[in-house]
Structures are given as C-alpha cells and as structure tokens.
Length: 624
Image (cartoon, rainbow, N blue to C red; front, side, top):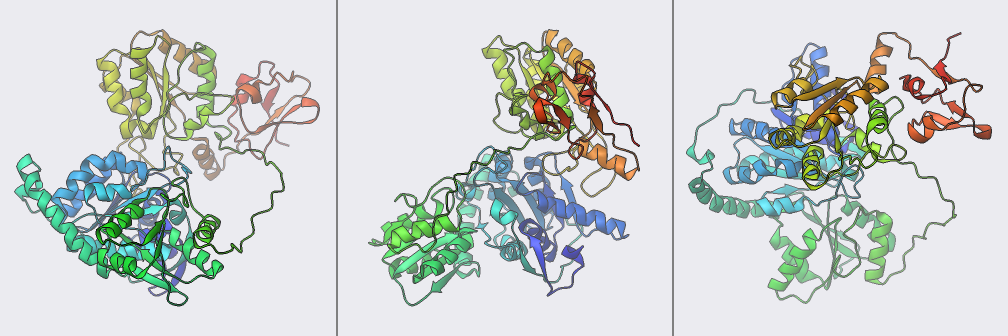
C-alpha cells in the first residue's frame, strides 16, 4: 500500500482525498472520524483500508478511526479526543457540516487542545448533492480559521501543517475542498510519518461547560484568536503573490482549484498580472491584500460559487478609499453557479482585459448524445421493493424519499420519489403530509440514513399517531458512497467485530406497533406486507431487508458459487413491456421487431424478473 509503505521523499500519485489522509498520518493523527459522503468519502475510506491492511500484517494501527452514526457525532467524538490532547480529524461532505453545525459553532467558542482539522468537501455543480452551498461562509459565521488547497500536494501539506496551526491557535480549523480537488490525482511528495500520541489525558476546566456565563467569557477570546490567526495568515506559505510577466497594474485574486485555471488562462492570453493565490482564506491576510489593492488599477476576483473573497476585497478597498476597479460576480463576468474550468476563466479574463481569446470555441457537431442518468443496478433490491409497492398503493399515494441509491427510484418507469430535502427528511415530511392531506403516504429511507437521522421523525410519528407507512430499505451497507459499515453491520471501520443493531428492534423500541420485515426478492409477499401496512391506522414501518446485490455477488464469487443468468423464451414472450416499461431493469433491451432480451453482461442474477413476467417467459439459463 503505497500511501504508507513508500519511503519519505518519494513522490507518488495520489487522489486529493488520499493526499489529505497521508498529510494527517505525517502529522501523527490519533483519532479520525467521518460520516461518508461524496466527494469526501475516500479520506475516511483510506483510513479504514490502512487500518485493515496493518491488522492483516499483524501490526497495530497507530490511530483510531470510525464511521460515526452522523456528522454531528463524528465531530463530537473527535472534539473529545482533542480535549484530551490528541490530534483529531473529522471529514464530511458540505451538507454534513449542516448536521454538525450545532456542535461546530459552540466548539469554536471553547477551542481545542490537540490539533483538530474539520474537512468540508463542497460540491459545485451538485455532482452528487442536493445543493451546492458554499461552506466558506461557515468559517465567517463561526470565526473558524480556514485553509483551501489548490492541488493534491498542497492538500497533503495543509493537512500536515494544519494541526500545528490548530494547536497554536487552540482552535479547530476548517480544511475546505471541492469535488475537483478531492477527485483529482496528482504527484505528492512524501514526508516522514510522525508517531501518534496514543492515549491522552482530559484536564477538567469549567470553561468547557458552555453555560451562558462561560459563553459570554469565551466569545471575546474567540475574537482575539482570530486576530492571532490573521498574523499567521500574513506569514502563511499558502498565501503568496505569483507574478506573471513584467510589472503590471492588473491583479487577480483566487483560491482553491480556480488558481490552476487562472494561471493557465493568464499564460494563454499572454498578459502580465499579479496573482494573489490565497490558501488561508479565513482570516484573510489584510496587509497582503491591501498591498495588492494599492499596487493595482484593476483587480479580478476568480472564485467558484459565492462572492466570498469579492465582497471582502470590496470592503477593504472602500475602507482604504481606493479607486481600484474590482471585477467579478457583481460585474457579471463570473457566475455564482456551478464549477469553473479553464475555458470559462479564459473567456471572462479576455473580456475584462479586452484581449483576444486564443482558445477557439468547440465545434458544434450538432450531435445529440442520449442522456445517461444514473440508475439502480440490475438486481438492486430497491427496485423490487418499489415494484411491489406500486402493485398495492393507491394512485395518489405520495412518496417522500431520502438520500441514497434508492433516490434513483425517482426516474421512470418507477417514479417512486416525490419529495426530498435532506438526510432523514423522508419520515419528517411524511408526518407533515399526514397533517396536510388525506392522501396515502409511503416514505423511503436507507438503513444508514435510518441510523443517521431517521429515528427522531419515527418517534414523532408514533407520538402524534400519524397515519403513515415508513419504509426502511435495509441493504446492510452504506451503498451509494462505497459500501461503508454502519451500526446495522457486524463490523466497524477498523475491520473489528461490532455489535449489530437491528432496524426492526430499534423501531419497536420507538413504540411502533405495526412492523413488517420482508424480503423484496419475494415480490408478492412484499406487496402483501405493504398492503397490511397501508390498512393499519397509525404509523407502520416496513423493513425491506436484502443485501446490496453487488455485495451479495461479491460474497458468492469469493465462495466459488455460480451467479445465475437468465434468458427469455421468445415464443412465450408477448412483448407486454412490463420488464422494461414498468420494472425498469437496465439488463433488459429491445432487439429486432420489438423482441426483448437480457444482456448477460449486465444481469446480476437476482431472478426478480421471473416473478414479474405474467407469461412465464423468463427462466434461469441452463449451463452447458
């Protein structure tokens, strides 16, 4: 495993997320926690893989790692480690910081002892998210020092040195990344792995108990900490002015991956400019920024999403009574939407600087490629559950859903998703709909989501006697983000045996009286279970329990078992279109004259299609 086996001073190719893990190891990380979420998942997955790898070699990992039940708990576990003098890291995707923010905001008041890096992985363009919020504002909101890397190498260094900054300031710090950085691969120069501290010691202090009196005393200290942080920002090697060409009155301010696009664009346009590359973006190095403002006639701010830097530079220029012209989002040259790329940045700079853009626009060949949205895998148990529900649910039934693979049930032909806000919102919105309408309501959440934030709204449904059916799609893993464990699995992130929590037992403890546990592979039995749940007056929970087909087939291959394949008897097939038009399994396809066939390369051998065919035209293929 190169990430830990290669010798110091070697240069290896790492994913941005892997580079962050390596940086933490070089800093002597003691405790790492996470709730998996793209684009941050590989940071945690790397810790998990390293722990298992070392155990397999007979070595004890120097750090403790866990996939926590949610981001708030992940932050609290790591904060406690920091209070004990250990170095801690917590990673999550951007919306995860919303979940953790209750602890995060007060944590900044009390500060930390051991260094603590909190990674927020933002997702411009919503590649795998329900919004593209700009979490740099959490740094302003909470007064948190913040770093933003440009490359995997810089991400590694920021993770390594971030612990030192955190300990110097006695404050947790944000390491803000974006999808393009998280999932980029780059050359990373390795340094020596530092020995972890092992066990810490918690020193009691009344200032850790945030009563109003303590909070009032701590808030001034937080502001003083940010003043010290600004001095660090002024001297930080992550903040620098990169001069391109001769002396210029043109300044460009940027951070994160946008710096790469700016540098490339300036070189392509052959313009002279002073580029202020900001790696520590909260607090800003105001003196350095002020020097740039004084030295320039024009300043262009290049940053994805919100005008975080732009607004601060405008305020500084105003305070300095500067006449510098600032270009950015407010002048209409850059968008607050989506990701940037070299073409977007080059085009904007060419218009602002009034120079010819040497990059020709791509030729429009007027070829419309078919849309290829993500879909549920062939053999996914969620598809069978949805098909069973549609057999018994009234036409006007509302389907609140949640975040996971099963969200893909929104697409035709299943169309089993009507409302989604955030993790755990399925059951909460189901309760609200029960108050607001007489329509039947069947909500869906995954098992990982159930443990993350699905339990409180179920309790709400029980307490208020809501007439809803809440479905837990228990495929025994956190599937969408890479099959990470959760409390419903019998092992943890370190690969150790763990107590397995059964969804149905938790639901029973919440007071639910009508509980159905069904195997979605039995489509008829699953439909009957949902019919009984719909007929029950009050909250009912259906646990649709079957492993993710990818995990099931992986286990079969390891055991040397055959994965069956299926075929269609063309003489029996009446081309009724149920398999494609209603069940929607992507392993089916149309052949000549409307005939229907099964692609053996895609088929995962679940056999559900045998049950849905009304003409018994589908059967397991005999091996010759």
